[in-house]
Image 1 (cartoon, rainbow, N blue to C red):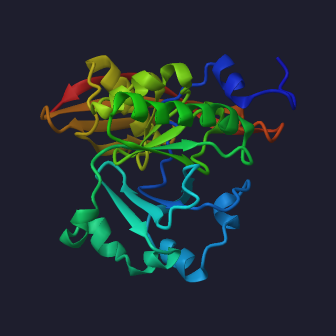
Image 2: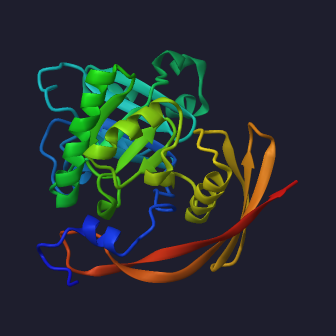
Length: 302
């Protein structure tokens, strides 16, 4: 099959059996999701008309990444929603009177879990769904449908949680993609039919492994190891796992994971098989190389 201007990168990814696991953003540990009601372009964050001082303050967060979010229908709401998600740990929600309200936030206290910000904690899940069609049409086609379906879950199931549209999470070819906070986990290949099972699983504190891309902030090899060890053990409860160490060269990785609640550790072997040419987006008819990992087994260790 030839990849043309009419091709959809999500279909190409599925046809080539590209794995989902190990594809979550590894470089980000803190997510900054700021409501923005202006136009979203292909480079929405860079193009956003934010005050210079506000943008500079947001850029001071070590390991942080700024996302723009929106909910159609909030145009007349005076306050601006802002979330800070510290992957796998905490989620904070702020309702700002203006963008300058960001300037009063003390990042060191927030990142440390200080008592001063405890009242802003949100424990129910936040789902960010990539819908930016200016970036890639797969996100507009698949993401918008999933966003609406998840909003319907709130209305009909009366399950706690928030759903927002987001500018860009990375990985158009896995559309529809979501980022779930505070867990810090990314999901992909969601569609309207799978939304109810996904929503209910996350609301119950479970990981729907069929859509799991991995934990953000974890190296890709650790994400691959976690997915396969969880599948083998039938352990899908969110949280409670740690990366103790990663050894190896640039081809074979020995990943030691700790299941904290069970008090057990596992050593998994993950191999980087090769770099594969992939169509990353519908917007470009050029391929880029992406890693292909292979899980080779695990054992319980002390």
